[in-house]
Structure formats: C-alpha cells, structure tokens
Image (cartoon, rainbow, N blue to C red):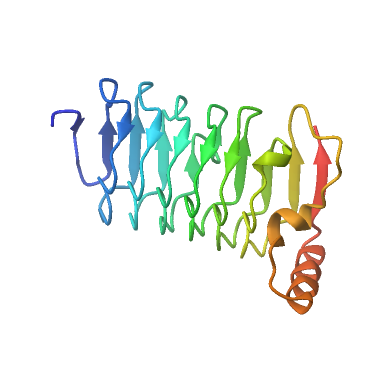
Length: 198
C-alpha cells in the first residue's frame, strides 16, 4: 500500500486521496509519531486508527474529515491540536470513546454539521474546559463528557433547539444515583460551568 508514506521519527504524512479513510488500527501504539499531516481526501478516521500514540501532539489538514470512529484517538495523551484546538467544521459523526483519555486537550469546536456524538466520546479528557457544538436533541448521548472535570463552558453554535438543556446534562447525563448527580453538579459548578449561545 503506497498510500501512506514518509513515516519518520516525528512526522507522518497520510495521503489517502484514493482511499478516503485511515484504516482501523493503522497507527495504533506508534510511539514515535508526533504530528500527522492529512490531505483533503481523508473523510474518515477509522476505529482505533491512532490508539495509544503516546507522542502524537498535532493533526493538520483534517479539514474534510466527516467521521471520527470509535476510539480513533483513544489514549493519545499528548494530543492537543487537531486543526487548531480540535476545530473541524466538517465533522458529522463522533463515535464513542473517540477521544477517551486525550488528557492534554483543552478546547473543542464543532460546526453546525455535527449530527451524532456517541456516549463517552470525550471520556476522562480532564483538561477539557471549553466545547462549542450545535444543540440538537438527537445529537445528545449519555455521558459525552463524563470525567471532564475541568469543563467550564459549553457554547451552542448556529441554530439551536427551542428546548433548554443544562450544560451539566451534557457532562453527567446518565449518572447512576442521585448522590453521583449531586457530586457531579457540584464539581461542574465549582469550575464555573456555563452554557452560552452564539
């Protein structure tokens, strides 16, 4: 497969114009890659594609990505820059556990095109403070931001639902007991959790 080339100590270029996707587990546990440069043809990052890439800090050129599959960046602990602070307006689907334990991420921004975000998409991203996303009732799954204990602000972009939803619900929906819900609400409020509309 000639599609992936220039695998070096710190830069990987993925030119998947002909294939349009990065296959399952392709770079799992690749310990030397610090940066991935994608080209416009990449529309899907498949399941566990970058699982446990311990040194991965930056992904650029991902402007056409529409699907981020289950666990695509799971345990990429240094990942903090995916098109400038995880800003990919083209993303439509973020599967469960896609960014679990991406503990260096602080800012996430999705455009109005986001259609689906699965449960635990950002599980235990405990440095995550700000999220911008559209508010769509069918978009919300349980515990999208569970374990994001630094969450301070959720901004709603574009057209929003007429129904009000607390930002705490995005973080802690599905808590198992009233005690859990009360503790989670107290944590979020102590971080100054707010919901704003753009």
